[in-house]
Image (cartoon, rainbow, N blue to C red):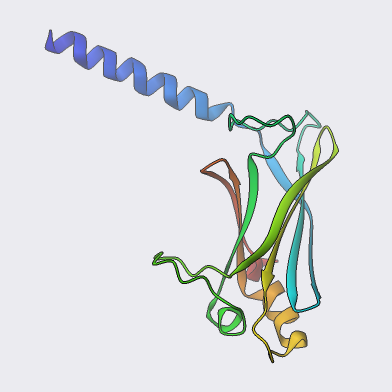
Length: 153
């Protein structure tokens, strides 16, 4: 019986690992940072490397690709100029204003996230810090599928 349990666990583990290998290879095709009306906006265009259609592995009730989400984690200098969520998380989270996705083509997806800037903050400084002092995360459902520190760009 113990032997059966071990074999079952090994088989289940292999199935899970093989499933993760089939994840699409998405690339950041374009990143845009903009400020308007005290709102910091990040826009990212994701593409598949091989031109295949983008598919979410997140099962949801909608009809369009809504499983993808962009989250931006600020470094300390940017965080000091932004409104922050106070939700007890161990992560520094900027206060969101809005966000969403839009299919540009089968192999391109626009994802955006907007965050609230603290009143009186220097928007020129924020624009520079937003481009240099943050990390972008792309989620498919609750699974992080891409990470990009902007300081390396």
